[in-house]
Image 1 (cartoon, helix red, strand yellow):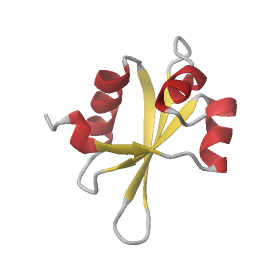
Image 2 (tube, helix red, strand yellow):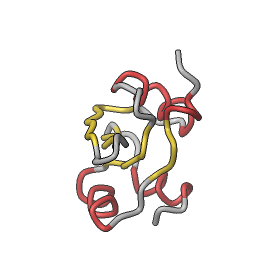
Image 3 (spheres, helix red, strand yellow):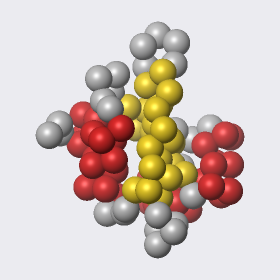
Image 4 (cartoon, one colour):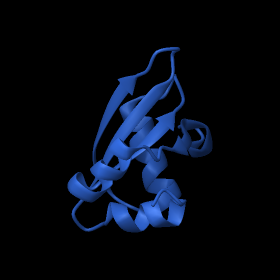
Length: 87
């Protein structure tokens, strides 16, 4: 298993990211280029103490990766984002 701190690089605080937090209970992270969905799910669950429902990955120009993480209904993305300083 990869180190969670090396998988999740930082949370993203764009307009789209904030909209996803409010409407779809999703958090958005910049992740390591070699991370996969399983790595991201485990890292988010360990670092933030939440349950992850699904992960969608997207490759950006320049080789960077972005992960959209949907939390289970038991957990509120607003609360996690507040702790991370995104909102």
